[in-house]
Length: 157
Image 1 (cartoon, helix red, strand yellow):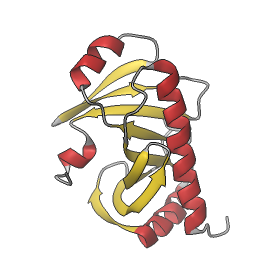
Image 2: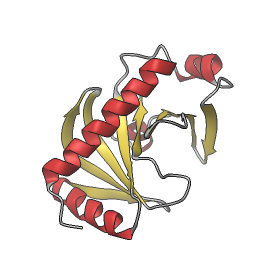
Image 3: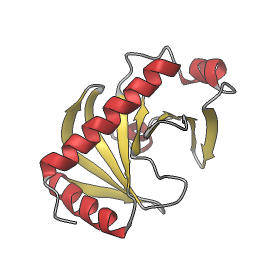
């Protein structure tokens, strides 16, 4: 694989956010909520190495997680607002789609009460936070709604 340019990585991020927003808007009434972070799901070690290398040109790793380095990047304007947090996820068989975007809700509990249990929605519990996943099998992206949002978890807001 040839080296990708920063502009190609940024366009991939914008496409993931756009497709995630379309998915969110189709299945929820949370239409005008901002993106909090995006994640690219790599499909092999070569993509992981390449995307991580390019991401390091537009930001720096602020946290290493078991599945992905998390970058604080120079803000990218997306259809859902300015994006400054990016994960480059290691390949695993449950993440063969392109990626995901996480959106910040004004009222997480109300959203949870309304959508959890509906087709496509599931709860993911992690130490210190939880998130609702929206995953539809014929889509190339997923949506997440975290409580608290990642930028708040990291003390960035």
